[in-house]
Length: 184
Image (tube, rainbow, N blue to C red):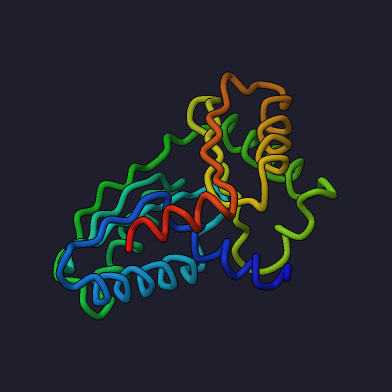
């Protein structure tokens, strides 16, 4: 069960929204799945980056945030090479360099993933909870099993010294599944 859930969550770590055209849904779905694999397998993609993608008739729009400028270019180039991608609109933003934000990212990640409630999320190469920090403002992205885990993750992030605000965009597995079903 945990392995199935982690596999399911890894598939959703890349996106919070996906748009598909009425014609070519299956082709766009395959392109999206390939993009998801490509981004998640990128060695420099970490829990501190968040990339969302939408696909419509082979045109891919990338949004989200990355911690280093080279990641933006690398991800765009990797996505452009995916079979079926006709064009890439790269709207990924690069987070400002900040030693304090870096320290905050690491403290929040350590606090979340060392919490016993989240040990099963820490297994595997792609952790499903992404922590985006910009000017001490934290955004949590990804998929968790239930509302309790979502609330605990928010609480952990909120209680870290220096956090100005926390935006909790974590979805439950059921919410992510419903969003996927509505897309088709």
